[in-house]
Length: 330
Image: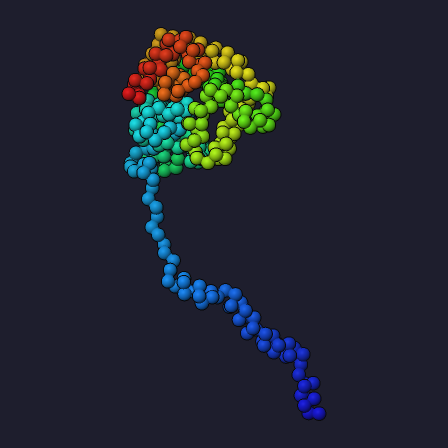
């Protein structure tokens, strides 16, 4: 009876607590066993402890001097070392402008993927840059302002002609459109572009040039190259159609506009050495040179060069190109 009484006197909460305590060691052991490395593996790991290796050195092509400005542009390794002109008009424009402004810099072969803004060129200022600048990259759109902050703007004669903006728009629309169409071939409708992947370059004559300059340097993988080529063509198609009401752009129309633009530029230059009658080259001269040089440059190895014939009809534009080339790239 007393044994029964002692059993009946036990409270339910005490029984539950004692039961939980009795189960805890088993639970702890199971968790411990789960995270414990088996002895055979532990002996192997003990023989090969983790090692923290030193950081990899920068690649040989990386700039060694931090006291010099570095301009990242589309170019190849050899041309970058020798400061030769970029094969990209936007890069060549600012590369030439910095030379006009007397800014000392080194060039580095780069791609859009390396740019903080997603496009080239961009400039990394040296450690010794003035207090008005920082170590942050300077995109192309801000290079003119940055150059002025470095004192280089005083060496560039600004065009005071009221027609400057109008002719800049003419250059960017007429000549740039022709360049894109010339480089990527005649464009078809957007539907055709998306459906026919292998018809990205309707003009096959210059597709090896696009591959050599923009696709191959980015990757050796076929699928990556195909993707890059597709993205380039989409960007080119957008560039051509963004100012047009139609989704279809014909090469003939673009080339006629380019011919009219060259004629207008030749008339503007006249018998002067530099545009707008300036005594020294300016940003507009660099902008025109960025296209005329590449159109006439034999190193581009054009297979189909319709723009060359248009440009050669205007001797003053050709001579302007040679003056710029001799002054800044010889």
